[in-house]
Length: 337
Ligand SMILES: *Cc1c(COP(=O)(O)O)cnc(C)c1O
Picture 1 (cartoon, rainbow, N blue to C red):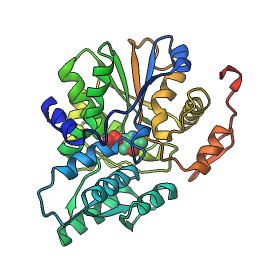
Picture 2: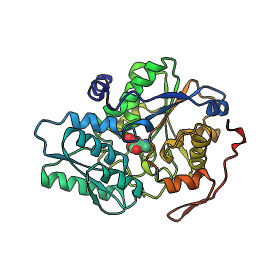
Picture 3: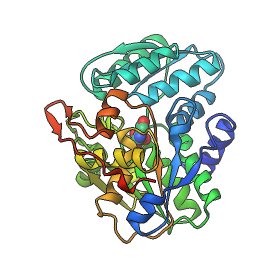
Picture 4: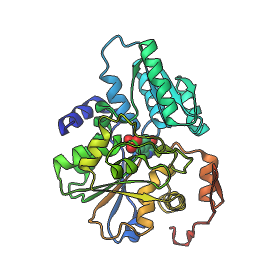
């Protein structure tokens, strides 16, 4: 996996899944005391950056493939459904019952067949592997795949072209396809740019693996950052090694902090964004990233949030996540312009 794979991916997705806006956040720049930029992957056609990797992987398939199958926490499935439809291919998406209804219906609306199985991403993964072994469907993995990683890495090329002076990149981290792809490109172009992975402190599989020195089982629980749930695979082949080698740091944030991050993005930057996008914002707000070199960019990875939950968060109401309660607290909008 090298910079040239990422450049190849860029040519493959050009004009379809690229060119998202990079906008300043005056509010976060004030909080950080340094320039903060937001890369709006939430503006992708299906609402998340995952289209980059899925489209790159699907366009690389040999002719005559009968269709594709994947497992997903939601956005990868939606991206695969979108890209498969664009290529005229059948798509089957395997999801666990933890995936929010808003994501399930979004995938269904794109014409994909759904299989809802088990209570974890591992269960959904098993079903996807079974279907691919049985039916000839080609599996498009959500993160641990060179074409997917290279596709996600194209974000870094756009960021560095727009801002060659970029110093720090805050990247939401789950299976690590996004962080690995970005880090491969960034570190090849300028190793002095800091790449920091951000994730929730409940069920953070990549963080646990990096600490243990190998992938370890992690219990998956409900989170405001639902797109960051799920394991990295005990037989992980690519993203674990790349994240271990290339990420400068991994920082964890709590559900209360993600809640505040979503409020900040909404009230201050006027953005509808998933909890998964708010981890970088959350870490800046909490002050635990003080002293970073600027400009700092974070990636607003997707907008496919359950609007019922979103409304509760931005209006300061309690949110229940399984057995976990996030206590409501209204955003002080007096600072909002
Ligand atoms: C998938 C996803 C992530 C994390 O990406 P990984 O490649 O799994 O680390 C972050 N945010 C959103 C919205 C996602 O859908």
